[in-house]
Image 1 (cartoon, rainbow, N blue to C red):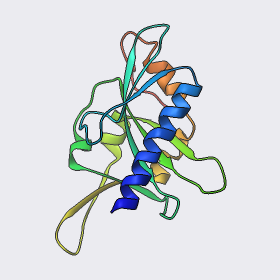
Image 2 (image 1 turned 60 degrees about the vertical axis):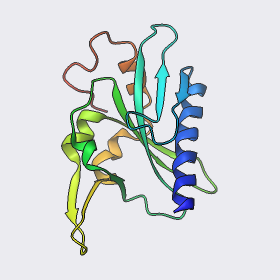
Image 3 (image 1 turned 180 degrees about the vertical axis):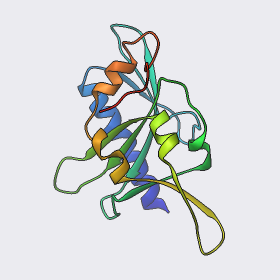
Image 4 (image 1 turned 45 degrees about the horizontal axis):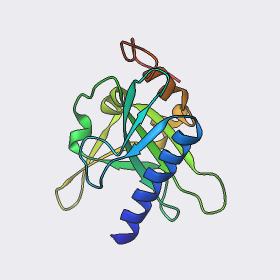
Length: 151
């Protein structure tokens, strides 16, 4: 469990570092904050985006990312997911996906134990790879994401 927590936090910090590199003020929230892992602000507009980060570690598959039942609930237009795949010897992969898209594309599977697993596959979010311009769109549009964002 410890290595999953470390990978998860690494994903958060790598996403925050990338946001900072792109010129955003990126604030990492305290661990286990339910609302968001990062709050990023465009210092030119003062508008913010809430970001939930999901990470696949170096030694795990990147064919899917686990989610929870609450990820199926509607989120504000300024809520975004960043799915991170960590790599040992190359740049990490980032998929920047609107919450509305995630909500509509979550898959559910019943495990042998009877518990429900919620996840999103890489195939569903592949077109959002490196789409950091979604953050710019959210933090410069006064009305959020009109009609939804598509890559």
